Image (cartoon, rainbow, N blue to C red; front, top):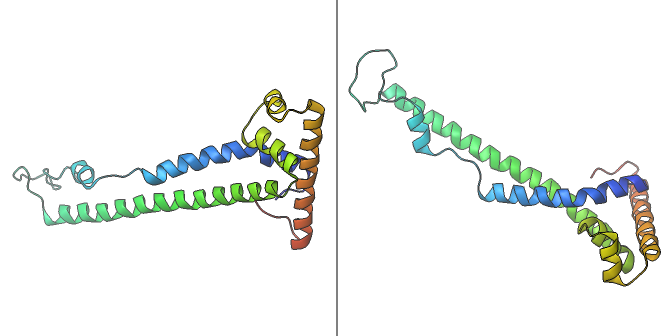
Length: 167
């Protein structure tokens, strides 16, 4: 997960981007790109014979109908695969966010507040200072202590698992 201060900072800075990606994926999950059956059938020139011969307008041969049905089955499969890919990515991102939020919750309250406001909410230093009614130096201390604590948690979990944690 994270074992150095730089890893912690990089992960915390990624949080807003992860949240935006989740919102995008949730939207796409509810509104997946799909090809309708009419679009598939209209996309095939069904009124024109395949062999160059003549046929009446609107006539569909058995062979052409079978192609259209197979194409629709493939389109449905591809649409379903797209939704599955969205779901998988959404699951990964939500797990990363939940894990990061959990670790931040384990900090002392003021450390967690500063970390959340600065990294998660992307507030400026002066905004946080005004909101929390504390000096810039005190804010820096809370932030630095929080970053060190998160790094220590990551190192502890790495040691417990005897391998680097994947986030």
